Image 1 (cartoon, rainbow, N blue to C red):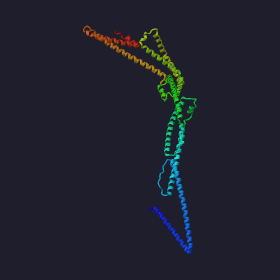
Image 2 (image 1 turned 90 degrees about the vertical axis):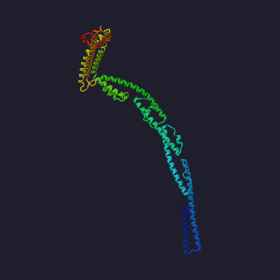
Image 3 (image 1 turned 120 degrees about the horizontal axis):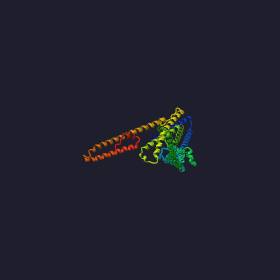
Image 4 (image 1 turned 30 degrees about the vertical axis):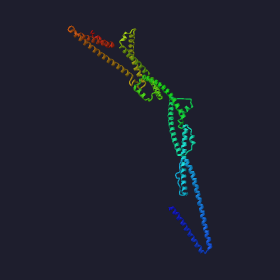
Amino acid sequence: MDSATEKRLSAGQNFFELLHSNLHILQNIWNEMGLSEFERKARLQNTVKQINDLLSDIIAEEEGFMDLAIKRIEHFKTEINALEKELNVEEENKGDFLGLVVEEHYYRQRLMQLREEEKRRKILYNDLTKNLQILYTRLGEDFSSISSNFDLSTEHLDELSAQLERKKELCKIRSAMLKLSMAEIKSMVEEMHYTTKSSFKNSLIMAEYNTQNCSLQFLESVQSFHEELKHEYVKFTEQRKLICEEKIAHLNQMWDCCKITSEQRQLFMTSIKDKYSNKALVQYDNEINNLEKFYESRKPVLHLYEEWENLWQMKVNFEKRGLDAVRFFNRGGALLQEEKERKLIEHKLPKIKSKLEQAVCLWNDQHPGELLSYDGMCFLRKINNIEMEYAQQKEKEKVEKKKARNRCLEEEAKCVSKIVRTSSLRQKSPNCRPLISKMCASLTKSKSAVMQITKQSPNIFNSNQKKTPHLY
């Protein structure tokens, strides 16, 4: 016998003992009251009837409670089955229960759990479908197939969650592509000052980038416009490169005219990061304008220096042509014309230098505190340095040629001495004739070398030719 049965038997025994004790008390009361046997019997029957009625009422009430519990259990089961089907879950406990109270309590708790789970899944489902609807709208896709399929199963919710992540990633990729394309479009449009009559293209150019529209159609339209602009930009950059090259050539010309130092030129060019950009064009124009103003303010001095520089270059060219012995074979008075031009240049150079000196002094008086220079030095000092370097170079060439002539004369004298010494032996030894022939050939070679040097520098050796007698 288990403890529950023992408790029920004990409770029943106590009830009967209590009932028997109360009846015994009633018997004693009735005895003291002197009631007759008939009256005691009647009262006892009435008491039993009242107890029986009370127990009947209690039984009816308890039966009502039991029926209500059964109905609740059935109602709970019906709702639980519907929720389990909706949520795609199985019943946890399908065994027997120890009484309706326990069974009712179990199904009530089970129903509460399923309702909470349903509420949680509905919230999750609504969040997923709401976010998916936003993403589908951004991607330009049809959302009706998703919204029409209401399913709270974990498999469907997991599928919706996975689909949401895929759409997020797709939106992220397309958004990045659009952002990059739009940034490049705006950059090229601003750089080219691009205009168009297309309302769509103007909307892309004028409006800020809208991250909401990630549809494939919109992406393809933007990329198509992007590619179109790329082709236009290539043509634009090629044309701009030609313009920049022209500006650079003009800039170099102005630098040469203004006698700007190479360090200043290099400093300006290194300050430009991209020499073919719009910014570089503006810098070129500004520098050219500044140089034009610079040149205009120093124009008299620069013109005189350029004139002197051209005359000096002509002088140097005449002297180079003078080294060519072939020119003496020219006819038609070309040599006389060259000589006249050379003398004219020699006559003009000091005059131009004197004018330049006067112009520099005048400019310094009119612009006190400003520097008038060529490669960082005064124009007159520049001219003096050029003349000094030229004179030093000429002196060096003169010394080198004199040394070369002396070496040739020494070799010639040695060869003559050997010929004289060996001529006395000609009859004594016939084997010396080949040696004499070699010496004569060597002498002839030395003579040719001396004649070549003399032709190249006839003016240098005129005095030496007068002093040195010919050996042959």
